[in-house]
Image (cartoon, rainbow, N blue to C red; front, side, top):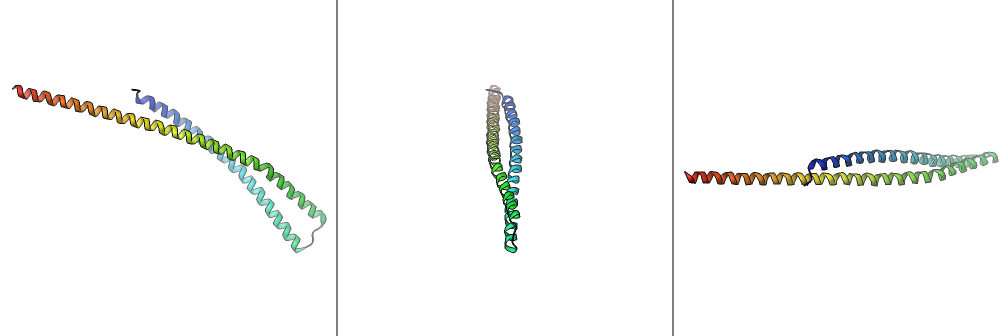
Amino acid sequence: MARIEIFHKMRDLRDREKQEHQKNYQRSVEVFEEKATLLYETLKEKEMEEFRFEKQLAEQSVQAMSFIQHQQYIERLEEKVKSLQPRVNQAREQMKTKQKQLTTAHVEVKKFEKIIEQKVEKQEQWVKEEESKFMDELSMQQYLNFQNR
């Protein structure tokens, strides 16, 4: 039977790996949040600019040059959105991958904890059985000693 200390060491090793995966996952969440926030802000800026320009059109006439500048600005924002979306999706996928790795590491730690728990229970059961055998033997010896008197 393998000694429990070995399983404790293996669990500790898996726990350190789990902590490392936790850090990696947290970093990937932060990267995703940064990129998603940037995309959100760009989309919001585009929406506000379109709303502002439509309001300006409704209230007064707009010069052709202003209209062209606005259109170019909106196109730059759209290009920025198009370039940000793949980055956000990539960051999301990396975050999902890191989360799967973290989940797997967590399961591994739990497996070793369960093994340790079972080993401890078996060892405690064995000790109880040995104590019971010893007590039976002691009881038998006392009985025989009492009979011989």
